[in-house]
Length: 386
Image 1 (spheres, one colour):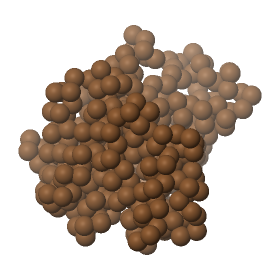
Image 2: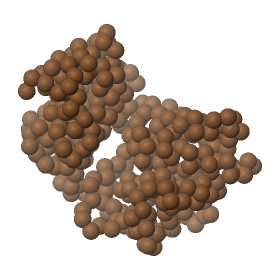
Image 3: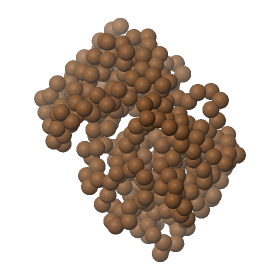
């Protein structure tokens, strides 16, 4: 690691924050300040001098992280603002729906920031298209009339991130188990001639193809394996991919998303086939103890308009491309029933309370005249008849 005086504030001290984003920032020479609302986790981080990221699977190795601290943003918002005010980089791994809650902290930090300091480099590392744009919008809303004065103190770059970080074993402390593979693609243009120094990240002029390739292959495939696996009574993602019927269902969905990616972005079909094979190989990694229940949680979010199923299926339907595999995955999602997951409980309640047309409109955000709407409504109707 290069010794520097650079600092990064990372919102979200969970497994992805520590095992992926925080690790690469550390390897880029940044002191990492984690911000989180989980008091016990914050205390555990502050009690440790280092933690280990365990890469499991072929080519994996242990990586030790040091030079970090944590702030409880609920108990000490002023401390978070002060850290942001002098940071070089701000990153997030909190989930797209939580971005609105951390936006005021970043705004407060910008208000304290020296106007002559280099612009704060802001990157939301979430499984969502345009997550940094979303964060910027929340910040503008939080700042109100002061936004015009603060906006020039930061630059915003969208990113595409990819690393499987499964549920962690008991007693692991703040160590994190991850897969060896990772990808962090970042928009180049917002940074001009001074991009952040993050080993392993790569900068691209047009991020959208990389974001959609990742979301519509990794996220769609992971969730499809989870829902098909759960319906088959399987426990782990690797078990699901070992089941011939589940594996065939995942492959069918991903062949459809690849056809869309080729048509929309001009990806070479052979390259996409190789990419799919790599992704499926990662899902089969038996060293990753990932469960269908963990991956399947929050099914309503995953069913929403611009997420991993309806997003690609809608664009494919608009182009007259096949969507049967994606519709089969949505059918398995509708059967997902985990009483410990709030969205799963809500999903099953809505399926009981609404007719198929009303459920489809509310859950997917599709307009009734969209070419995909009636086909999803038919899947919903079949799920309600079970």
